[in-house]
Length: 186
Image (cartoon, rainbow, N blue to C red; front, side, top):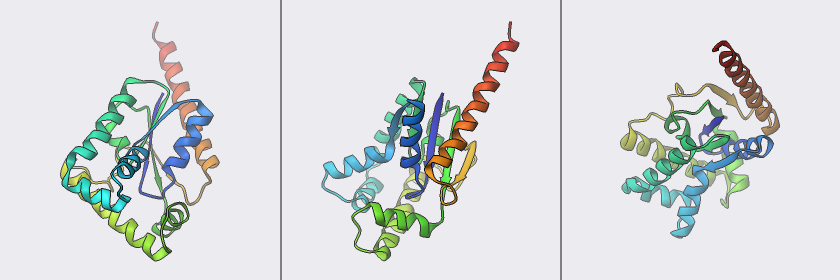
């Protein structure tokens, strides 16, 4: 089973992907962690690194290509990242998490080293605009288009455990369907 988990910053994709990987005992590959690691390696914060990525398409392409190759070549894997649902073409289940901007900003403020909520809001808006431009310019992708996703869940409404339970139910349905289709073929 190949699963992608995507969503805007602060929507809970990393939390859900980590939880699912642990519960299902799947391998996790996270584009966001790769991106954050690359920013740290260069001594930049996420906003600065995002601006650099706007002028250097190789940064996004390196992350996206690496994640796609790994995820498409393995089973029992969760690919977490903003564009995972677009790039992991053979994913069995593509999940998008959504939450209001205010909820996402509060989460970002509480997890990142940000001076105050207003700064977190400003940085989140800048980051989202930067990413939307890059995805449109580099790949022709409108990040607001959720058509690649099989399941859209509200992470503001449900806890990570509840979200995981919903995804696990979807996985069971897909596995049962696959089992039935396999038994129909002699």
